[in-house]
Amino acid sequence: MTKAPVFHSFGGLRLYLFLGFVCAMSSTLKGAEQRLPNIVLLAVDDMLYNTLESFGGSVEGLTPHIDALAERGMRFTEAYNASSRCAPSRGSMMTGFYQDGYAVEQVSSDTTVKDSIYTIPELLDQKGYLSGLFGKDTHYRPLEKYDFDIVEPMAAMGVGRSPELYARSVGAFIAEAQEKKRPFFISVNTHDPHRPFAGSPGEREALIKRYNSEVEDFETKPELVIPPAEERYSGKGNDAPKFVPDHEWVREEFGYYLNSSKRADDFVGAIVKTLEERNAMENTLIVFLSDNGIHWPFSKANVYVSSVKTPLIVCWKGRTKPGSSSDALISTIDLVPTFLEATAIEEPYRMPGRSFLPIVDGKGESNVRQSVFATLNKKGSTGLEMRSVITRDYTYVFNFWVDGKYRYFDGARWGGMAFEGMEAAARTNAAAKKRLEFFHDRPREELYDNRRDADALVNLRNHPERRRDLQRLRKAMRETLVENEDPFQEEYEAYFNSQE
Image (cartoon, rainbow, N blue to C red; front, side, top):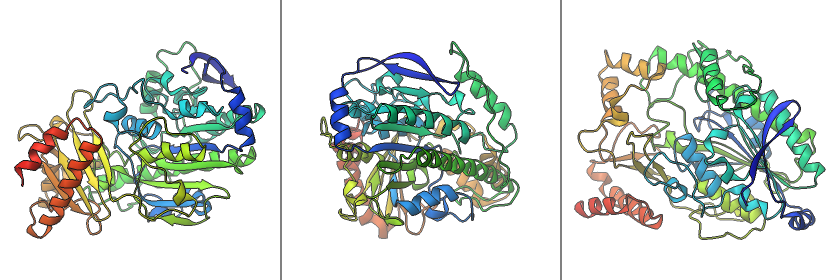
């Protein structure tokens, strides 16, 4: 049942509540008897999958709190988002469907959830859960459909970047749930390491601009708090990801990104500390992840490994083996079935995802999927329609937007120092020039060897020795599009038949 919006306040911070009929009190008592787990979905914003030391990151001491969480739980080293932009990705996490499955309008930038699709808070409401959303409030559309009891906007928490303010708000929410003796679900989301990167030129001005746009329609505006400064990685010459050509500006911006990643780690540390202080770790299922890759060329708003692979951690005291890991292929559409199994709630309809709770408990097969699937649709009126099938060995990409005339992002410049560095490198380096040209002009099909070329630099589509692998992945793409009733299934079928 969707709740009508009213206002509430915890600790002097403005909070948005959704109150309505409390029709789950009997199930609340029943849930308490069954020791229903609390669930915390802890998400960072635009973090590349191998930034963390615990996931192969090379920067020592960058993410001690997240790495400590991994030591207390289980790392999933082959986990993938369903999309590579924030709102579509988070919609999939919260519904268990790919964007075209949950959205009102298909093949568009729309992430409005259909009435017929349940969100996590709606599903958990039948067991009496108190649900809270902290940050990313504008990415859950429509907000009323998500049925959160409490919503704390990013504008009230240091423009989504203050670990202290997040901890204060989450702590107050947990206290209320404990007082009411209700299990809780929290979707808590820092906006780090999303642009503007910490310590970068113009960061403060960009944050103020974002704050003003967020509170424009607020009746009462929360206090503007500039997040804590972080500059320790600025100008250090850190090695940047290889999918963007090397240049001093690329390395410089990567340092700013690392600053933001450090502040994201402080956020995770603050939330875990809050759970501990509220004695809420005993029966709490914590899932940590990033919603997509870094906001750089060839990562965010694409469907490569660097776009959708995510550092997924599950920590559930007494259930996960500390320091364990799994290489099972996992998709974020699997989160909803996992939460439903953990709370003994039946799936209301057939879902494309599958629970990985048996893996968490150490009882499941090491590989529950043969591949994962990622989608990308338009951004506004800009066509970017892509699909990828990713296995352990290969990434297969099909660019539906390619027609021989249209250019990626309509040929527009991305902006940012990394892109500017790629442009500068292209003026004197032939390989960088070729990479820049490829950024704008893609082929219909792409094939990459994940084990040797995770940065997707060498397209193997036309290599004769990979012909059999290409055909196998084409079949997997066709089957996946049909299985998910993807709006591009007929177009791809025609292409598939033309290549036989």
